[in-house]
Length: 399
Image (cartoon, rainbow, N blue to C red; front, side):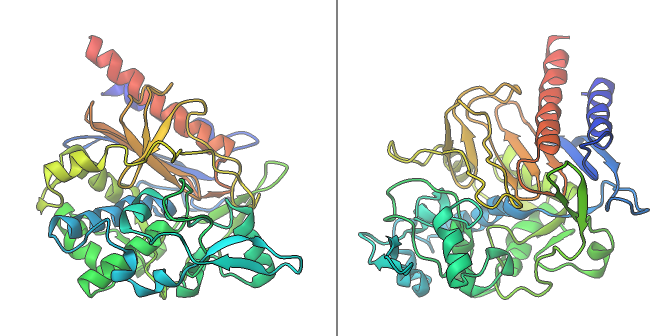
């Protein structure tokens, strides 16, 4: 993947940072099993600012944090310290306090009852525990508006103490599950999640530019989050940052990092769990982790944007069957971008997206900082970027 890949991807990046519905700035990278084969950037860190966005720019990576937390969970399983099917309250008692929300009474009070079964860590890893997000679920939004339920972006323990939306295991719903999974890891390891990641994931992979709290160097390179307004214009939100010293290291969304660091994590998954400075996961763990873990009655659905400033209605590859593994979305059918069935990937709230194609041995990451999620320009640009990666790889294979 040489000049053709570079010219195609550079063109896509330039296109999305120009015109009426532009993005402020974008960083995108592609890696094979050995090294990055494309690195590009275009635009600005903050719209109207004087700093160009660069490949070492730092992003709030939001839910692309989840797979790293999932890796920390799998390490505990490998060591025999975590039973995925034991009640999660055995490790984190507070999750046993959560009750099921059965709607609201005539006065608007939540109707709560005990769950029919315990939440397990397997359910947390698969988003089948009954937890959601207020920007994707109207009942959680009502609790936030009427009952003061804190948002997960506060990175507070109180934000995790939400009722369950249904009995654990009944269905799939995307939510704060991996934040709780991170708490399970902390309980087992006796250390904060960031320290566990540093010791057991980041160091073996040579990842330095990634953390739950920004150091001075990272803060100096931080991209600003922007709001896409109704008319398509962009408003910088420089104060839209996660707490600098979070009460909880939120395993579902709390990391900041530069994209080159995440590529090292993608390479680990491409290389069956091996890193340049040590093994992170066993080969058999990786092979089992990337397979669909859902049961027949648990279906990955479109994410409904119930807070329009935070998310549009969003779905990867509408009409194609998707499932979930530990802890990625799996596309169960070949995708129009060229991504084959069985590949894995996901996204982050401020329009960051990645995929990992273990079959063909490459993956990529596309990073912007825009709300709401599912921004047409960024999401569309990402899909073009992924498509270009496959088009040039096919051209190379056919040569």
